[in-house]
Amino acid sequence: MIENLRPFDQRTVDERREIARSGGIASGKARNELKQLKAVAKAFLEDEWEDGDIKMTGAAYAFSQLWRSLDDPDKRIQAFNAIRDIAGEKPKDEIDLKTNENADAFKNYVESIKKE
Image 1 (tube, helix red, strand yellow):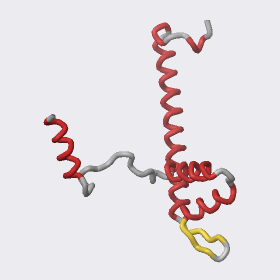
Image 2 (cartoon, one colour):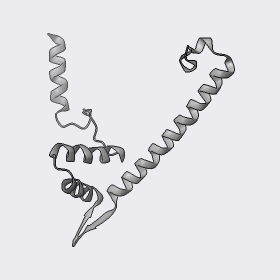
Image 3 (cartoon, helix red, strand yellow):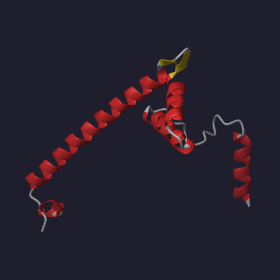
Image 4 (cartoon, one colour):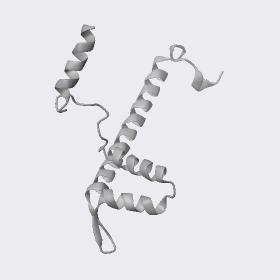
């Protein structure tokens, strides 16, 4: 049997403790690397950049560079979205009914469906 495929219930307490410890250290390292990557991406998007005579935000500069370097329009958008998401600027996927101007109409519609 391969040593690293042995189930946890067949390992000693010290082996389990060491595996958990090394996993915790690796998790902390990965968390710190992601935090640094987010900080760099956010700073890149917020800074002002110059391209020739044109001054622009980091987001516009990133998009212009991706536009020049990638031939496929879908890849351009995917790359820009990746930068935006890493920076923590991903838009919400959920609709907040408290701020939606059609919230009352939607609530009335849901209530009418429940009554049927």
